[in-house]
Amino acid sequence: MKYLVVLAGMFWGLIVTAQQFTNLPVNQYGKATVQTLRQYRELVKADSSQVLVNLSDAVPHLKISMPYSTHQNFTQQVLYPQAAAFLKKEAAQALKIAAEALAKKGLGILLYDAYRPFSVTEKMWQIVPSEDYAANPANGSGHNRGAAVDVGLYYLHSGETVPMPTLFDNFTDTAHVNFMALPADIVNNRATLIQAMEQAGFKVLPTEWWHFSLPEAAKKYPLHNLSFAQLLRSHKKG
Ligand SMILES: [Zn+2]
Image (cartoon, rainbow, N blue to C red; front, side, top):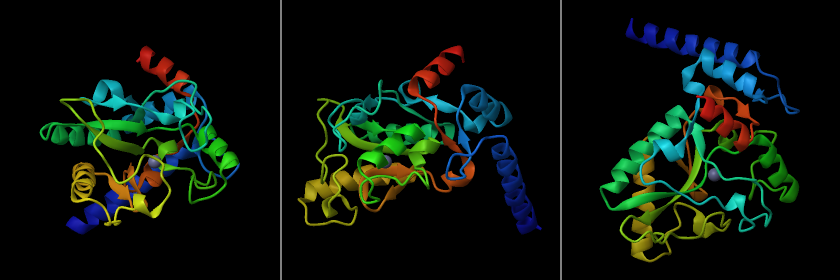
């Protein structure tokens, strides 16, 4: 009986998900995509878990340093006209749990990227069309769904960045989470980050120590192509 209830719940989840996304237009790859603030508001009205939360309000001690809003990133181009950090509610809550656990160890979360408009994923692909370096727009990215986040750590007492195996967006084997030819303190720092994030509900990407996403995100959340200006405007209106 218990299993029947669980199965029925899963089935209902699938129906609800499918219904939500049928109202959305699809992009050139056939994927449901939120393209206007009106579509976003309707999605949130139907299901409050679809809201994108402003992380600067939601996550304690969060230090936002987004390289895609500067020239200092792998594309060497400014990809965001302004930096803002948003995630779906479930992901924002998980990040808050991780931040609280890390604060007890004197550490804060250094945020490199969170929600990313789909148009930016397309632009990254135009500049660097390789799945070793960028998400293929045909699949979209967990970032486009507001369910993936790129993070490091900093020391709360000094504000200094905690040393990790590589800098953000280093696409060598050294960034792999199982790369062990490193000083012991660096291995420990990486383990501290991954443990806090995974205990909060994220999964690390095996090839990028900084990239964490919610499992099953593609089933729960459509792609979004809203700019940060649109999201900030929508957020102000509540
Ligand atoms: Zn990422």
